[in-house]
Image 1 (cartoon, rainbow, N blue to C red):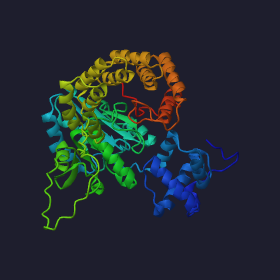
Image 2 (image 1 turned 180 degrees about the vertical axis):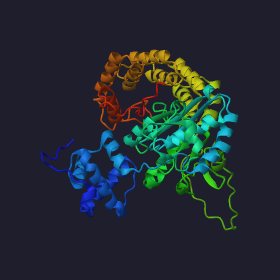
Image 3 (image 1 turned 45 degrees about the vertical axis):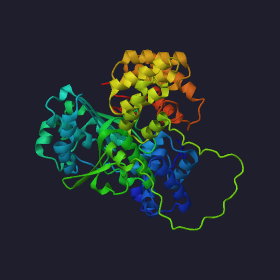
Image 4 (image 1 turned 120 degrees about the horizontal axis):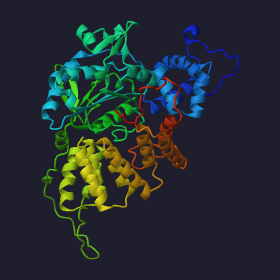
Length: 518
């Protein structure tokens, strides 16, 4: 951090009462930087507000004024730590239990019963994106506890993410004031919370353990991804978040949400974020006068029908023109190139149409063992559908087709981790390193697993190896097999592991590719 110098007094923005003084050119560049890195929309008519927020944040960066702080950001760039700190000042963390209650009624009466009754395997995956202080994911936990009688037999994932580590820290503590229950029936507080001596209310352990809190930047971090657990979601809650994004980022986020949902998955946004144009890939559902969005591959088949035969128009008779002599032999019209099934499936995969990918590839690969890349794509499609055992089967078929490809062993290791088969995953990661000693992700994964097992020396060795390899990359380079993670981002994550925060900081908060060991 930059030190403004000894004896410099950091001003309190509440005491200054000043109007905006930073030049428009600087504010324009900074608002563009914020939009690109965090997605937040600060147009010109909000620059006064932005300047005040940066003045409030400037003390955290050891600056006494907003302009110097902004100029430093523009010249230095924004690291993950900078983004976390800024997000705490730029985002609003106001929420409460069972906010916009109609959404929870629809969840209880329609969506969850539909999913539960149609599911052979007892698993349920929900993502709360922009979870703030945690009231929303805990509300979902409470709802699940009420409506699923055999909940202990289910594999429940409630992933709650935010870019603001301050609110994540509070959420992970699970302690709330009375104001968080302002529209909540009294029985909720009495049944699922314990009153503390200080007059706060502490979330019961059985409700708390269902939720995993993690840092995630919707504008920058990759999703869907096996690495950060943002795949095969049955339901995504993202309420009162999209409204703060610039349109380009909002569209990108919505498309990524579509890809992160399994087929027939649901996206739930706030009423103020409903739009007839922002969600073209989804089926629009109206329940109880509330608009929701559903992923359904049948829409893909409706919007992309088979080409109808073209009937030539009837032309008026005219005298024929004199024939034009043609030099050389007649040549047959070139045949339309045959579409490669893999290329077609890959395009569908990128659109999040995993069910269609499976339909396209399964028959081809069963008739012919296929190339490893086709088998790999099929494995990834099954994983993104939440069908992890099928994903494992096809990843192993890919290895049978090419035992010397390290990326295939890495994929198998990733899938095995999702199945909780840690020792087998470690074995596959070691095979990856045997075939490719420079595999950054294999070293990272082994370090992460060693951390979970309490093998700290082994953890440090693998993390340091990963950092050494990452130093050969540019910050913006996307790592192979990472599903979009850059070298710079992974470097930041590893450094948070080997250089722990001071005691109390970050407790209960997971980084985006650090899975909950419990």
